[in-house]
Image 1 (tube, rainbow, N blue to C red):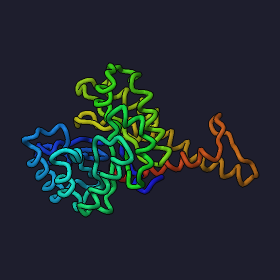
Image 2 (image 1 turned 90 degrees about the vertical axis):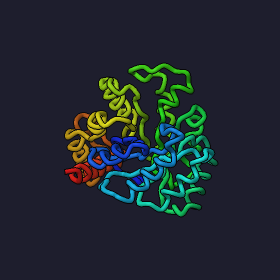
Image 3 (image 1 turned 180 degrees about the vertical axis):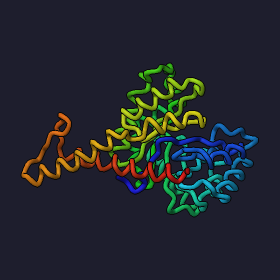
Length: 293
């Protein structure tokens, strides 16, 4: 596990232009909150949104939720000012958009460091075909990368693909980003579903993403939180099996055997690491959910 490992079952975008949403987010069962200064914010509201977010962070009250600020592109008129405004605040990460290369990552980190955020982790959005093709290069750029987030809506548009329930047009891209993230021990989170009323499709996407290997899903509406949290929470049987695997293989090793059968499945050493990760994640989730009470 990397040092930034934590539950990210649900990463909710909260628009900086709406103070009511910034307030409401303090009460929502989201693992992570992305306070958003980026593309969804109208140009006329950019500076107001920045001040809203700064004020909200200073006011606090977000508890144990991971607090992330998505800044505007560094090439935009607002990117560097966004970074200067939030770099020294009590946040868990800065999310950078339009990352397509190692250089983009290093430039983003340099800008953050220059603003005084030397110890602040970064997250990167993978939102274009070029970014997907360079996912390995991006993931390897820095150990400051806490998480890679796939911007599936942008990606579908740029691929000229169609939105389908089975997400078939995206599967190759999703898998490439997951492989890159896992190769360099980064967190990795699935993109949004923009059809806000189709909960069946959203739930299906969550469970598909979980099975592919994502840590969680980004989302844009509080009604989606329950589905994402449920899909990415380890089930009781998984927790019991993980404990059984660790115990059974330990006993087998003590008896001079390198493998053991648990619930009719062959278990080897690499399963221990996966089982321990699941148990650690489950414990973190329980503590996080207890903090909401």
